[in-house]
Length: 189
Image 1: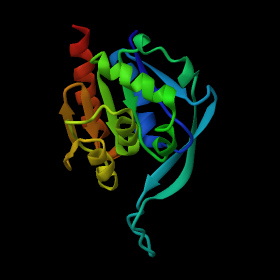
Image 2: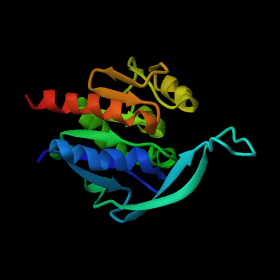
Image 3: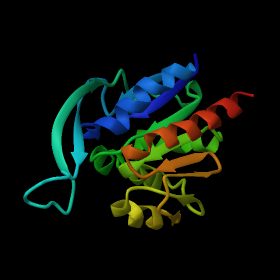
């Protein structure tokens, strides 16, 4: 079964992470969760409450499920993976400084393997230096991160540019996974 690498850390967004974690095996892919260390991590829910009596300009963050990373970034060998799925949440804010994660991200990209990314995950792709000259989407508040990485930001449900497939937020998971799986299947041929 081909493996998909999923980097996470504390404050990874629940729906960004768990939807692909359970969806990709339905198409025959094993999701391998990696983190700064092989251990249990906390996920969080991010949303702007629809009927809040006190409006929020940013998303609220609440604790959610735990997810275990079975491998540390330093022990990941990019050649073992058919692709990369980068979820969002606040985790990418600090994961983007992990040199081993950036190495693996660059190696997977340079090998032309499919990479899916949504929400704040763009911060990792920017830090890895792999989106220069690409057209991408992300959550609107990360548009500047995409542009600082040399990409053109557009506000669309899903954008495919070369081997990189991007979406804005977890609401776009279905479109993101549809395009990512197409990329994975065509890479197998």
